[in-house]
Amino acid sequence: MGVVSTSHVLLGLLATGTMHGYDLKRAYDERLPQARPLAFGQVYATLNRLLRDGLVVPAGHERLAGPDRTAYALTDEGRAALDQWLGTVEPPMPHVNSALLAKVVVALLDADADRARTYLVAQRRAHTDRLRELTALKTAPEATVDDVVAADYAIAHLDADLRWLRTTLERVADWHREVHS
Amino acid sequence: MTQLQARALVKSYGPTPALRGLTLDVAEGEIVAVTGPSGCGKSTLLHCLAGILRPDAGEVIWRDHRIDTWSEAARSRLRRTDFGVLFQFGQLVAELTAAENVALPLLLAGTGRRAARTAALTWLDRFGVAELADVRPGEMSGGQQQRCATARALVTEPQVLFADEPTGALDTLAGEQVLTQLVRLARRQRTTVLMVTHEPRIAAYADREIVMRDGAIDHTGLGLDAPMAGGTR
Image (cartoon, rainbow over all chains, first blue to last red; front, side, top):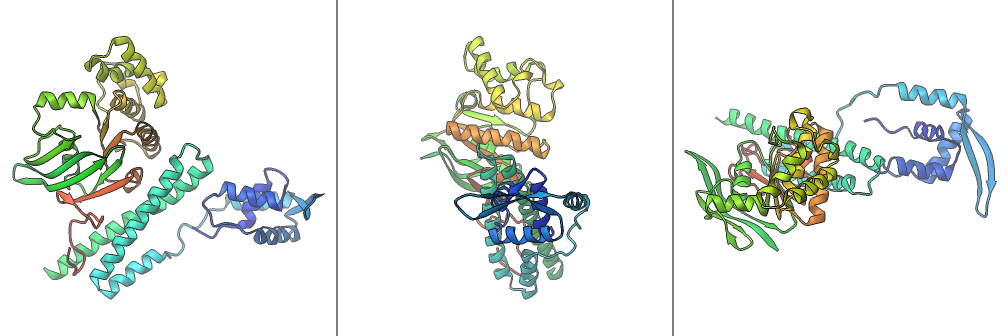
């Protein structure tokens, strides 16, 4: 659940071969199609940092009609940094930090059941709509493995949210029955 | 165009009501998921629409024909020709091979043996199990059996496919593969699909989701048995 380490993803992409900044950006978008888009500026800033730390080296220039294009290659240190990152376990949900959770907790605190309910009905609809959208995306005949893997990830999380919403609603209803019986 | 309609359907099992006046319209080629908590009446609805069960009151209308008043034999014939039915456990005939199982509905409908086998092989191939044509269900995995059962449900190219928890007995990936293929083929042939499931992930394959609660459609979509804290339903 942590923030994606752009540097490590770029190192991983460079492990497949030398690339220009432009190619890296394209490869990133292709491999992580549903991720928050990566700006060109971010790619170049990250490359400069990797260069400074000796994790990548320039591997030749190419001067076409456009701007100067430097290709980059992974160094042994870069390879080691990548291996270390791949071998490190991500902390599983170190903070239970979700806008959805926060809103439900506040809605329940507020004890305005009708408003909480209106919100939950709308939220559930938004979740199921997105679930349907992602399912259509991954079942489309032209879907690539990367599309499917990314959609699977999002679907699993939306599904978990929906289950949790349901359990919470049932729990609150139970609790209310106990208190008022 | 509306193809299938439930009009104020009521059905009880002894004193227990399963459907309380449910009304639903399904368009031709539409894929509809029916969801809701267990015991909400979703399977009963599916069985009434497919003509397997007769409602106590209300009407089931298929292309302007009121089919709930038809005889058992007539409804059964409808299920062999225009309707396809798929259950959670494929219910393949254990003594028959995959190809024989898939050919069965065609043979029952009067298709010749050879043509039925050819069609069966085509449909097994569409579900990626052509190599199992001469294998009996006992020697197949659950996923393979369900692929064969899905092929069997579609081999007559029905107008409507009724599926009750079609992937309920399969692991995630196998279930998804069956469902993806089913939905692709249904869209290609404009087959209407009514699918009962309790999983939002499965319902997301449909064009529309109907949530049931207590024998009726729950328009909030929450499908809750109990009211929210302090709230009205």
